[in-house]
Image (cartoon, rainbow, N blue to C red; front, side, top):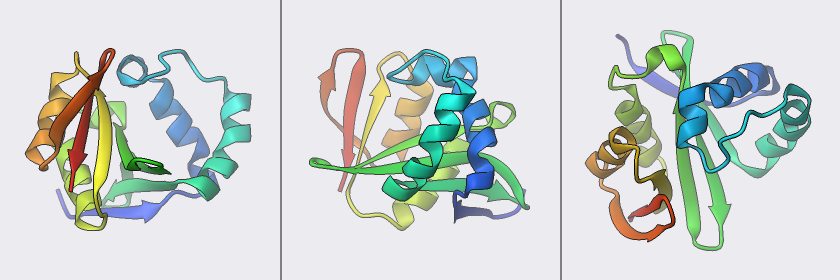
Length: 141
């Protein structure tokens, strides 16, 4: 497997990101676990590209996942989502390492019942700072 690159998401990525987000595993790990309607996503996506840093992870030109960085009052929050067929291959950590190499302090919120994601974030230097219901709050300075 060759090098992983991150590129800015484009309008043409809307359907791919929507499919990844609506995957059952991705929904189970999200704060909003419901399915997202295509029309709602298509209307939301252009604004999201303007408001957030959304990056598509590619290996050999194939999109394998995404990272989203949302600026907020408590810092930048990062979230990841891999293409369903790419999960379990160690790509989550590679994508997060690539994001961390180019970002300042980061926050994350991971479901407590998602040990795989918790391990990835902790392996990349994130430490637990608290809990909010079902979510573990993490920070990397």
